Image (cartoon, rainbow, N blue to C red; front, side):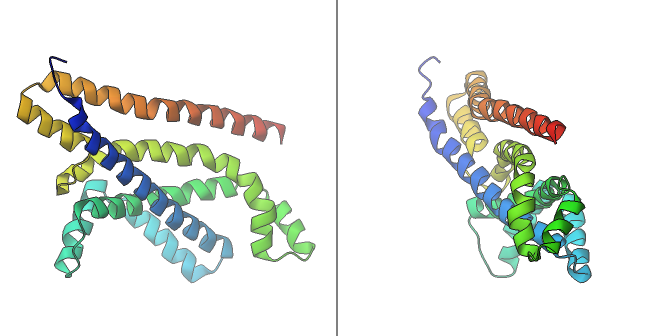
Length: 215
């Protein structure tokens, strides 16, 4: 586009993938942990998990980012902007991940759980051998959709100086004055990155619905 060097956007694109991927993995780990705690049925921990998810879901991601980046620094621990973005977005997304897991686990009837327990299986084995194999196909589509969402939410990281894709694009606009070509390039990059994943989510959701109807 009129000699515009779009390779300047590459570091930002890679940083966006790092933020989205790191936040997704962190959210996955926390979400799985909260789902397992819910499966134990231990009331004090259930109250803690429910309180955590309610609180986190009520906080906007940008506010969470400021809390992590500036709040931890106030306590004497400094995180770079990239790490802070991963932690903040990962914690914010984990509350939703926990709900995805809960919804998928609820697709397995309690009678199957009770049958496993009556055969002498422990709760952990019932979860691993009976519940998870049936629940995972229902959890995969929303989990992938979560990653797509994080690719776009990662733009918030520019608020604390992380050089992600939008930040790199804005910098290129300022240096070259070519706002429209850079904006179009950003749109193309986001579409190319998210469209295949969105299509995959649609296919997996169709398979999950077909599996549920057969069941």
